[in-house]
Image 1 (cartoon, rainbow, N blue to C red):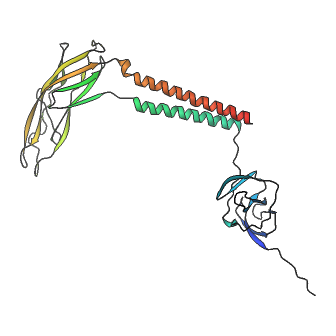
Image 2 (image 1 turned 135 degrees about the horizontal axis):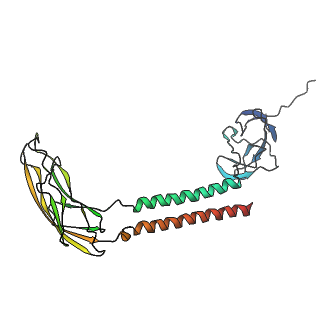
Image 3 (image 1 turned 45 degrees about the vertical axis):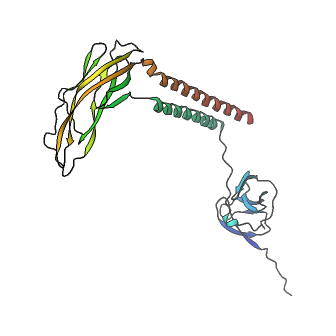
Length: 296
C-alpha cells in the first residue's frame, strides 16, 4: 500500500532587500532569503488587508498604494495572501540623523535663507544710476541728481543706419550762471557712402548729453537750464536717395537736487530687513534644535 504525501503549495516571494525571487510554502511565517541570507517575515497591512514580505531587521515598512508606515511587530501572518508579491517594493526605515548632523542642517538652512534674502534684495534695490532720455524734438526734460554727481541724459531720434553728427555740439546753461558743453562736435562719417536699393530704412540713435550737478547745489533745490545745439542725420528722400536733415535742439532741463543719503535710503532699509530675516531664520533653527533635544 502506497502512502500519499502532501506537498505544501508554493508561492512566489520577492525579497524586499536584494529583490531576488524564491518559492516558499504558502503557510510559511518566516523564511531565510536565498539571495542575501536575511530573515524575511510576513506582515499584513492594516489598511488594505494584504500581506507582504518584509525584512525582520526593519522597524517599519511601507508598500505601494498605501501611505501608512507600519511597525514590524512580532505577529507572523502566513504567506498565503494572494497579493501581487512580484510588484511589491518595501523601503527600509529612514536613516536617523545624529545630533551634530541635525544641528549642521538647521544652521545651514538658516544661512542659506539669510544669504538668499540678501542676494534677492541686493538685486532688487541696487541701481547703477538714473538714466534719462528725451526725444530730440521735445521742449523739456526733468531729472534728479546728487551734488557733484553725473546725470546720464540722452537725446533720441531715428536716421538711416542710426547715423548722426553735430556741427557745434550741445551746451547746457544752468540757472547758476554756468554753461557746460555736454556733447562736443561730431563730424559726419557717412558722406555719400550710403546706398539704398529702394527706400532707405531708418534705425534709432542716441546722442549722449551727460552733465554733472554743481557741487555747490543744495539738496531740495531745483535747477533749471537750457540745452541748445544742433544734431543732423541722414534721412530718406525718395527712392534710393537721402538728405541730411538738421534738428535745432532747444530744450528746458529741470534738475531736482537730492541728497546722497536719500539715494541710499532703500538699500539701507533692505539691508536691515534682510538682517532681521536672517536672525529669524537662525532663531527658528535654534528652537528646532532645542525641540529635538527635548524629544530625545
